[in-house]
Image (tube, rainbow, N blue to C red; front, side, top):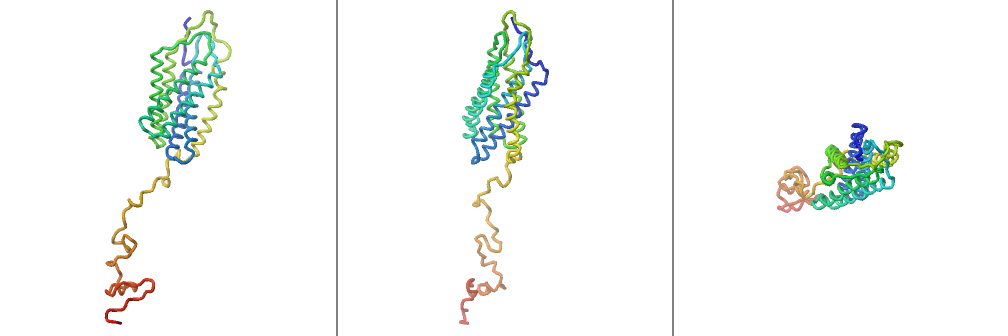
Length: 308
């Protein structure tokens, strides 16, 4: 028996909240990655790990908030907690591998392609592993072409996000990049859900018992708290919020600095040139008269030519 699927049983609420969580996780992850790239000496690995956990938690939270709006009219849906949390671990680990590759190798083509592919496959693995944890009296089938399309969207979105993390440093630009990432990740989720069909076993009863929301909400508490803590960490780091202050910017090379003007009082080498000697200065009175240099230590003039 074919099940009747409704992916928007709560209307537009779950897609909007899911999109907001994807944007939040993406924004925190991108800013943490940017922080690690711009400061290579201070807690680089820590910032990269925080960024990977933020992105992974945001994507995982987005997925299961969206799944609250998924229902099969003829069956009750439950979730296996072990597989559900395993999908969170897969997301964090694989996103972390991609972020560490780009964080340490930079925005090279090979690093972006490798990191983006691993991160995108991690996002797709999280999605389909989370779907494998769904329990209902029937069998879930997927359309192969739509599944491949969802994986391609995930890889492209992850590659673009990693490029933005190491190439875009402004706060507003990073905010825009996180929104693009949120659109791509949410689009990947609903593309993957469009590939789903449910074949129920004969004699399946109508939905009864606990709702998906009551089952998933307790599982979402931990990642939500983590995202809030990560947001506080980012908010209290002025380098992440406001950008790099002027005193942290590299100073120009002293060799490249322009030399002082020749007409200055002491010339380009800190020695007063002969053509700028003040004839009324007693230290240079003898030199101005052509008698020779004055000894600045003794302030005495050399013997005059006439023997005085």
